[in-house]
Length: 502
Image (cartoon, rainbow, N blue to C red; front, top):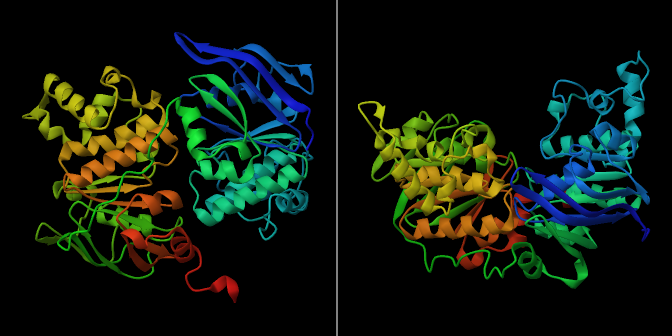
């Protein structure tokens, strides 16, 4: 790895009206280096990435490539200089083939090229990102989410990018596919590519980087050598304060009195029926990779996914929710894994989102007189540490962490007996994660039964009182309190039947 920066940002500032997103920030990366870029939501990471990749030319300060001053007006200009970005939201066309997506802009392709020709051209780029087994003529929508992320990177490499920006590449992936992404990143760096790796998953930052750039409130906190700090120190620099405990203490014991009984529930997408109980005041974790069945079971309990058979028993009543509204009437709340798609009304104010599940509580004879909604929403906001001064802001303008707090907090409006949460901290920074974990524990202490599904192995190990593991549509095992161990969980959700040793 070269020690001369291939890209260098010096004293770069960017303002949006009264908001200063970056304040004389500095950043650099060497050839063949994986540079971690971390910070809370709102710290300035996205703004810096947009400037580097040519999406935002309205900055002040110095931007150099190989010692030469540059200022990109468009992303295409940045690409011509060897800089490309793979954003968290994939930009692939599902019904087109892998090869067609790689050469979508047609920069290296003749006007008339067959699919076989494109496939041959795509092969070396797919090999470089580790997709040696993928047929380039396969449609994108037939690949896993992890494989699609790898195709996205292959597309960038095909444009001869020397500097790759990977923005939360594993946010929506399970453990096995995340590992594949990390292996690809290390392979590209070994081949001379420079990688700017943006992630809230700090364990990944420590695995693959040698240096880390930290932003806090738009100000760069200097470059840290990864070997010289630990997670606690990194978090302290990110937040500007010490974070005593990421995860709150678990329950002293688990009740033997079931609050919710799930009997022979067989959701679509699950291989066989599942049965388990959840107890009052318990946090129960469902662990598995994407498609394992954990998320499907959660959605089925919430009435958001159809079940072929089975029943729930809650508060002595046996039923099977036919819809989310049916589950809500039974005091079952469900926070989905995609807050932007179906968790929030992004174009509506925070206060409207907070009261949306319980309109009956703020209206009379179908009329909403405003004052009751305002008071009701403010009380809900305080419950989840949401700034009450921003209640009239659009939810879409909030950081990921604050959006997630609104998506969770709104369900307190129905006074739930059971709170279901799919991926409680996906795309959320470390400070907001700690707040969400603490709030979930406080709600459990009030007697609410919480069941969550997660692909985050750290979260599934340290947050719940009990864990049920899933693999390829099957329920594998159950672990309580002190018996919840990371190696055991990992084994059960990735290779419970020792298939890799065959």
